[in-house]
Amino acid sequence: MMNLLKLVKYDWKRNAGMLLVLGTLFLLAEAALTVYSKIKHLDIEFIYVLSFVFYVAVTVMVCVTTCRTYERNLRYFNRRLLPLPAVYTILSPMLLGLAGLVVIGAVGVLHLVAIGMMWDSGILRISDVLADRGFWSMLVASTMFMMIIFLCITVSKIFTGKKGIWIGVALFMALQFAFDWLEKLLFPDTAVTTDQFFESVNERITEGTDAVVHVRSTVPNFWGPLVFEIIAISVLVYATAYLINRRLQAKG
Image (cartoon, rainbow, N blue to C red; front, side):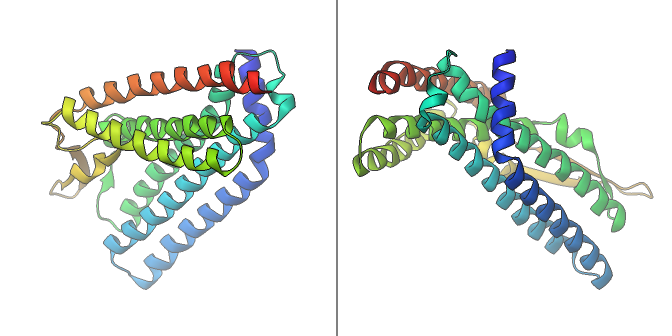
């Protein structure tokens, strides 16, 4: 475990500069947007939508950084010479990426609370976000998405030249389609899959002086798709580690 934490620390040091700059710009942009909107009395729905776009953008950047870190770790020969399990090569950038997503989620919760207080439109209960299904389902869905990319990167490294890139792209599209089809086949009564969770979320504001925004999901079956995606992540981790051990290390 200590060796894994050392790898995470090393990956963090390599990406700390860019991630800190990105995080600072993101926080400044969100703060400026919130203050400017309050001064100009802009519509709160517009603030929510534009803020959501910013959160999606920074989330994509964190995922891209995570995948680039994994690709570099596979490419660097000295990293592959370390006498460590292949699964550490997977978990190190993945833990870094998940930590970034958790931080973004925490900032998002605090930001929503601040917006609700500034606009007197009701305070979003933190328990509705953290204890309900949305936060955890999005975290699992993001992990699965990055693991699919990890596997495709690993497969592309087995083949030389542009052929490997195209094989990796084709595999990514095939896996996305296969998992989506299988999840819908196993859970036909589920309104949405976990990565589309918030499309089915409704909002209710209680009446009275202490208005509170309640967020609840209308998904009839949540645990089935979530367990399915956790199992899929385990399979993807095993397959990726197998390829690293049996193919990339043999290839040198």
